[in-house]
Amino acid sequence: MGSLPGLTDVAEIERAIQLAIAPAFLLTGIFSLVTILANRLARMIDRERAVRTGLAQPLPGEQRTIVRRARQAHRAIGACVLAAILLCLLIVMAFAGILLQLDVAWVLAALLVAAMLALMVALLLLLAEIGLAFRHLPLPPDE
Image 1 (cartoon, rainbow, N blue to C red):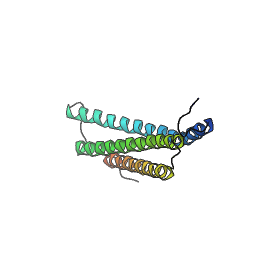
Image 2 (cartoon, helix red, strand yellow):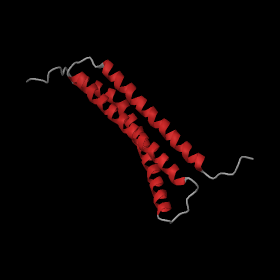
Image 3 (tube, helix red, strand yellow):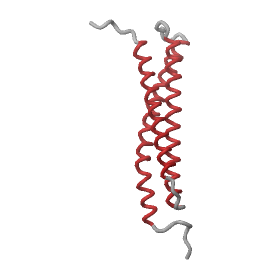
Image 4 (cartoon, rainbow, N blue to C red):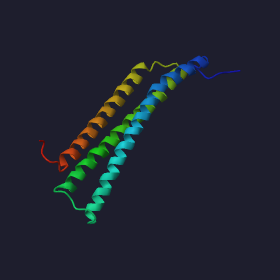
């Protein structure tokens, strides 16, 4: 009975699954961040529609601020999706490397670094969006 080329035993598959667990947990965190960003973006859209249709009074410069915030949130979502795609590719490459007995260590490291950089960009964009929202609040001066 033949086997797949490069497939030595079940232990190799188990090792691949173990290697894929950490990126899978990272994907869960990224999808949670995407949910947060999408909810923030939806609230901005709702507010902009309420102001545009006259259902709510705008604060001075609010529509311009909403547009800037929405762009930041959109870019952050894009960076999260890029990070998720890179992590998915990392998982696929880990399995392919083990099954085909290829040396993919540098590729895996590069994919992980790229995914973390994309995630860092997403977090910085979220921070920038929160900063825009905070600066626009009509808060009384500190006492």
